[in-house]
Length: 352
Image 1 (cartoon, one colour):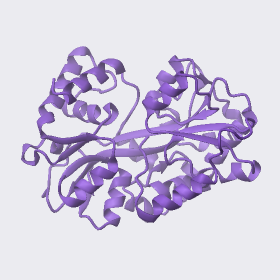
Image 2: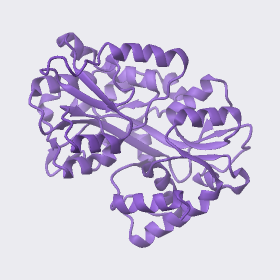
Image 3: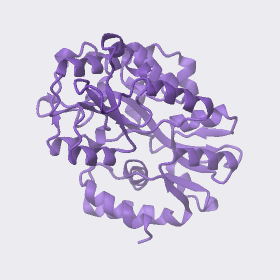
Image 4: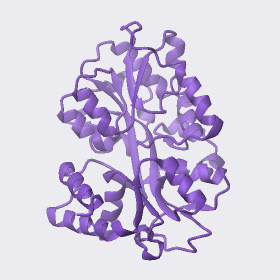
């Protein structure tokens, strides 16, 4: 999941709306609890649930997938959580989830097959996640400062831009991009292939100004010219275009990266009627349209996505037809050995 990037009045208006839905922990325990990314708690995403359940629900937020998993392992007990697909095997392995009954989700078949069939969403004959949101990771660059670059991830390895490059501080972005450049499957690497990826990242290390998850800093760096190219998401491109900064969102020949996240039901959830009411509300067309228009990311619902005007999709650097166009991207899934990847990536960042 990629955190939404807010600016100006939009940040404050969203925060005010969210405050209408987030219930204090001291309130009635009968309310279900939703655990989601910071910023993804907008009432616009579950209006149908609020109409049916005026008392609302409890919402708790996290900053990244690792934080979310650690908190639940430590004893936090939400009913529904919102991890990304690549982390799904870790939630299952920890015994935290219960399978999802898709017969209780009328819009299940309207979710694009590319998301329903992502590795881990369905496993052992059961469904473990309801995909909800997705987006792309690519290179965002200043078109006035980087003239006619090769459409390749190699731009982030170009020595002439040393000190003016930024990477997202996450293995499922930066490690994957390096793997694509050395021609290996990032999610099924042998130890020898992992060494190749690590060496590619080590080659890049002296050129990188920052490894960060603070995308506001990335946008500010690109706007000022402190950065000329950075790994980024659809929303960052939209924000800078709205600020009239001359940027482009690249389609690398090695392929863009596509991420997806969704809703899981925790093992200890008992009020399943309300849990499914909430999931179904999030799959309604108005919720999907609100996701696209507010955050510049895609909805997994084919019906909702079809209602978004083509001009809006183009503005947000989103494909007109995800069912076919996302086939030409690298869709993230779990690493074969996530601990080894994390250690290797940490070594590079530390200069080892």
